[in-house]
Image (cartoon, rainbow, N blue to C red):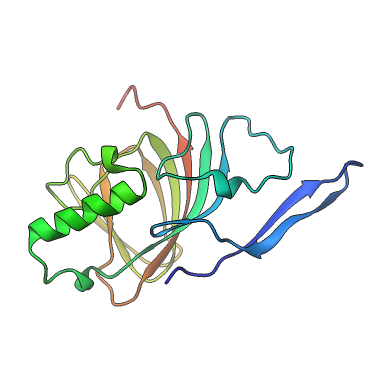
Length: 177
């Protein structure tokens, strides 16, 4: 079940006075992602009354854009009994659902390994999670922050409850990576 998230989005009226544009539960989801806002350029355009979260349809932000989202990772124990080939298949389907199948160049370390051309700011809000990298792993506790800079990685929940994370993804240039 997706964690319910109340979104409050502000705007300016025709007189330049601030007011609430949206105050409602976030309703746009893509698999385990709850989309909160998306921009399609930098600097972002704050004009208009559209619900930009409704435009999000994939794991990555648009070129020169950003994504703001919550995401949930279920405990790995739910699929640990499955053979590796089946866990690989499930991970491929999961990434395909988020239009991110092309982001999995090397899953030899873990089926959920992926790499995007982004700088991601991630905060673990609830539960426990392990950041799996090609060469090492880092256990996180709530309120730990990760700045993920275009590296191959996976989020693995070795706990007993769903982990809830918040992320801001910013399109980045990975030509030096």
